[in-house]
Structures are given as C-alpha cells and as structure tokens.
Image (cartoon, rainbow, N blue to C red; front, top):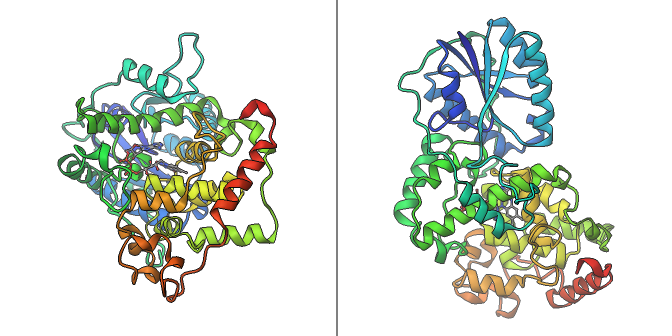
Amino acid sequence: MKSIHWFRRDLRINDNPAFNEACKSGEVLPIVLIDPNLWPTWGAPKQAYLIGSLSKLNESLNGNLVIKHGSAVDVIPAIAKQFSINSVHYAADFSEHGIHRDTSIKNELESLSIEFIATGSGYAVAPGRVTKDDGTFYKVYSPFYKTWVKHGWRAPVKSPKEFPKFIGIESSDGLPARPDVNGVYIPPAGELAALERWKWFKKNALADYSDNRNRPDLDGTSKLSTALKWGEIHPRTLLADLNDSPGHETYRKEIAWREFYADILFNRQDTVEGYYNPLYAQMKYDTGKEAEQNFEAWKKGETGYPFVDAGMRQLLAEGWIHNRVRMVVASFLVKDLHLEWQLGARHFMQWLLDGDFASNSHGWQWTAGCGTDASPYYRVFNPIGQGVKFDPTGEYIRKYIPELRHITDVAVHEPWKVLGGLDHGYPSPIVDHAMERLEALDRLAKLPKAIK
Ligand SMILES: Cc1cc2nc3c(=O)[nH]c(=O)nc-3n(C[C@H](O)[C@H](O)[C@H](O)COP(=O)(O)OP(=O)(O)OC[C@H]3O[C@@H](n4cnc5c(N)ncnc54)[C@H](O)[C@@H]3O)c2cc1C
C-alpha cells in the first residue's frame, strides 16, 4: 500500500498521529505545498522562518520531503494519481478556507478511489468538541476552560520506530530561495528547536510563570507560539508535562486561550475580520489623512509613547511581541488613535511569525472591547502606567529604542519630562492619552445602550 502524508500546520515527526497513520503503509510520499498565490503575500521574515522549518523537517525525513509549488486542489489529486496512492493523510484544519479546500480535494480523490483521511489537529481538543450541555458553543472563557479540562486530551503519541520507504523525491520542486530579511531576527525553526526551547522553559521559567509572564523585560514566557502555529510542537506534548502547581496551572490556562479562540472562530468564521459584537461596527472611528499618519507612526514605533513604540519595534525586529505589550499597542490603536482593530490585526498578521487568525483576531477584539469576554471598552490601558508596572527599570524600552538609551532608569517611560530626554531624535507624543481616553469614552457613550 502507498500513502501520502500531506504536512500542513504539523511540521514535525514526533507526536504526529496523522503522520503515524501514513507510516502504516509500506511506502509514503511526504509532501508539503508552497502555494504561489499565498507565498508572496507573506512577509520575508515569515517566508524565511518557514524555509528554515521545512529544511529541518526535510532533515528529519532523511532528505525525502517532497516540496511542490502549486495549489493544493491541483497538486494533491495529481500526485496521488501519478504515484498510484491509496490514501492521503493529514491533520484537520478548521478554518473556513481549509474546510472548503479539503472538501474539494476529498471529492476529487474519492472519484479516483483514493481515501482522504484526517487524524488529529493542531489542538489538544479539536474545535467544536467542547460544548455546553445544550450543544451550543461557549462564548465565555472560564466555563469553556472547565469543560475543556473535563473533556481531557490524548497522551502524546510515539513516533514510528522505523520509517517506511519514502517515495516521490524525484518530483520535488525544492525550497524557494530564502529572501533577504533586512536584519530581522529569525529564531531557530523546526521541531528540535521547539523541543529544546520547551526543555529550557520547563527548567528555568515555568515555576515562576505566573509571576513573570507579564514582564516583557524578562525571558519569562515560553516563546512557543510560532512553533505551535506551525505545528513544530503539539500542545498535547506541552500539556503532558504539566502538574497542578501554580505556574503549570497558569500555563495550561494560556494554552486553553489558544484552544478557546480556535473554537470561537470555528463557530463564528465571520470574525476573522468581522466584529464579534457587530454593534461595535457602529462606533465612530477616525479616517482621513491624520488618521493615516497616526497609523504609520504606530506601525513604525514612533508614537512618542515608549512602551507602545518598543512593542511595535520589537514586531519589526523579531516578528514577535510579548503578550502584555500586544494588549497595550492594540488598545492604543483602537482607543487612543480611534482606528478600527482590523487595521492593526492585518499589520500583525503580516509581521508576526506566530500570526494566527483565531488568536490574532480574537486577541484584537478582546482588547478593542468587541470580542468574547471582552475587556470592557471603557477600560483603556494607560500606555505609561502599563510600562512602569511591567517594565519597571525600562530595560525593555532601551532594548528596542536606541534614541532613549541615555535615560538609564524608569524615567524612560516619560522622556519628555527628562531634561534632554528627546535630544536623540525620539518624538513627542502624537496624541494626549488623557484626552483621547475621554474621547474614546464619549464615542462609547454614543453607542446603543444594549452593548455597554
Ligand atoms: C492583539 C493580540 C494579538 C495576538 N495575536 C496572536 C497571534 O497571531 N498568534 C498567537 O499565537 N497568539 C497571539 N496572541 C496571543 C499571545 O500574545 C501570544 O500567544 C503570546 O504572546 C505568545 O508568546 P509565548 O509563546 O511566549 O506565550 P506563553 O505565555 O508562553 O503562552 C503559551 C502559549 O499559550 C498560548 N497563548 C498565550 N496567551 C494567549 C492568548 N492571549 N490568546 C491565545 N493564545 C495564547 C500561545 O499559544 C502561547 O504560545 C495575541 C494577543 C493579542 C492581545
């Protein structure tokens, strides 16, 4: 028997039930697709990361990874036919686009008498499984978490003891050329790097995770979001190592946020760009030249608010931002600059290596006040207060904003109050936070009462 394992967001060999299923056949064609319509829309950093991850996957497969450039609906049935394949294996995808694509391919393969078999997904519990007693989905995180824990998940699966015979490598198109990333830091990619990072985090930071997870100046979080996004590691692998101590429990809860948002998006596919609470679409948002200039300043990290700017520059420098800072920069865009959250979400998706529609759109909607469990719209993050609290020495700011390195203490959060603070080219604040907060509340007051 011959099978294909189609690697998608499961770029790993270990704890990969779909790959294991494929390996039960005598001959396996391991394939990954580069879609020429999608690839150019990704920024260079994401392309470079993926090329790194695929190279590592190829090494794990002893150089047998077949890379095809083309759209899945064209390539998968054609190659299955060419190699007289009996079954095509993959891990399920729950996005609207993925469901639609997989249905077309299934129909095409079935017409060729080839099985199309999904095993597992990128989640501990597949979206759609955790429901209320009445069968509807949870719209609030805490009860979702309780039921999710009660539902439980499988233990990690062992990788095949021996690989089957790999076939098809002669038809590989090879990896695209690595683009110039213009100095952006690309972290080590691939399954082994993810397992190494998890090992380091467990040993050095997990016990203190509850205390340190909000501190962008410390290496206190796992930084595994990118590996989780691309399936270089499975959440089950992480969950299996957790006990009931406070740090471990908090970490489990964060993994559950990822699962919760995937579940919400599965049930509300319109919320990638649509308002979860549609009444917020009626809020007055700024448009026009000044709004565009403010948006540009936000993107470049030149708003004059150091904690916001450090975050936006971290995004451009590393393709990643600390969670606390993601919340603050998102709040600033929506509530200080009065721009729609989708503008920021799109910019994040272009730059974040871990960019994921479920976590990103719902992280934005939570901060903007229009999502599930939303942080109420009237709670406006103070960009200075948040900085002082979570970056108490200003270390994080100095790391990403060279123009402020001459301010060596906590005063760096308000450089305009320091003599010579703005002497090295750092801008004055583009807006007055106190006034914009009132403006945001005023716009909220003008919305229909039902949503406040
Ligand atoms: C506006 C905004 C946009 C976001 N966009 C994304 C995104 O595109 N992709 C993404 O993976 N996460 C996103 N997040 C969630 C969160 O910021 C990142 O998952 C986290 O910063 C990743 O760092 P870490 O791996 O060190 O996290 P850790 O603190 O080590 O947490 C472990 C894992 O739990 C999950 N997790 C933690 N916090 C959240 C959360 N709030 N929501 C969902 N999952 C969470 C992630 O998979 C993370 O890797 C966003 C949050 C906000 C506020």
